[in-house]
Image (cartoon, rainbow, N blue to C red; front, side):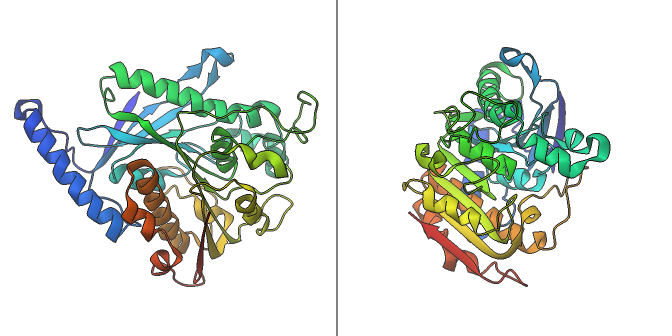
Length: 356
């Protein structure tokens, strides 16, 4: 386990007592509310720290490793939880800047590393295209990633009981899952979207049709960055019918899907059942613009529009989570084309927001 702090430690010292700690948290909460609504794209008022758990393993699945980096505010309190799933070929720092942004606004972020579809797996033999195709059709990985999320929530419950740094810090009644690309598939599956068996290797069950229900009732909301529409490799048209939780999907006009144009991602929103669903479409946004490892020691693939897209994506994500996990009606109202358009710049000059 390794602990790293970003900014000064602001946890109240023991001699000060619970009253001062509570006062500090209340002041931070008031400041957070203002920043979240006025500048949701910016980091919040709370300093953050990280704790690394590199050697976690799920005994129920043959010891599958599930490394987790925890981002959390350096304040006393109990905070909503966001489980973060990286894309194919990524790592637990692939969305580091986004995790830190949420932590600075009062969330605990559990950034996972999926060992069967991480950077090490992508680089194997330097066969990047073949490895991408293989991992996104690997039955163990496609069906195993959502189970990594459930394992992380099981682990979080144990930490919340007795861990020296995390006991009482995680509000497990308010949980969301967020993911990019293969991570978007993971987030949608944990919220009820059933994977297609049609393209899995090795053949699983009947080999076609819908796979198992991998949802976890503890998850109350989902943020899918580059959500997949129907078609190879993840979903069929009937895959989305099982989603019964609010989902925020974010994509854009240059966000191509494997074997399908960017517009196929809009089909996701057409097929998901109504119930607090939001879809943000950003002009000229490319696929890698939705991940940002800035602030970590590791890099992700470059993006021509990342600098312009990230403020919009971060603002939309925070406003959605504030509305869905904290019940903030004003944040929900700000999550609109008019509310986000002020952040548009450069070629990223038009934003659509759809709801149902």
